[in-house]
Length: 179
Image (cartoon, rainbow, N blue to C red; front, side):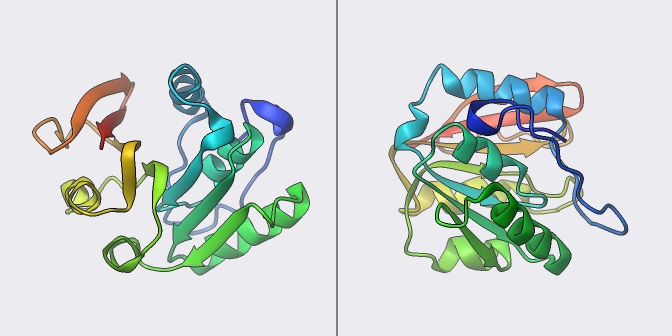
């Protein structure tokens, strides 16, 4: 895995993969996503939330590109430990808030607000549409903010409130929502 843009561009990292329940976004689809975002948002103004954060890949990418802050949420202990080590290695501990929590509990109870939210849930998760439903009906996503949900072709989120567009890269689909 590698960071595709910004101050850490080209930095490679390899999380331990033994029995991890994560499915990291591929470099190909991640690079495509951040090319889209680079043309739409000013990363210097981004307060980023990464749900089902896994390896922390998207947090590193956003911080590398100049995000004000990033919040990482995942409940898998080894992934959280890996992200803490990476934050120290990249010297971004001041910018990266790491939360070991169930994502659904977090999005239902957090009082924080963000202008860019990325959710990369495990593809077999049965309630993927609930992610956008909960976020779009609350105040977590700021007015004008963007939510991106990564999913596979078995999910269709086009009828969800705030849906704007979908981009497909192989078996990876990014559904964009605007508040």
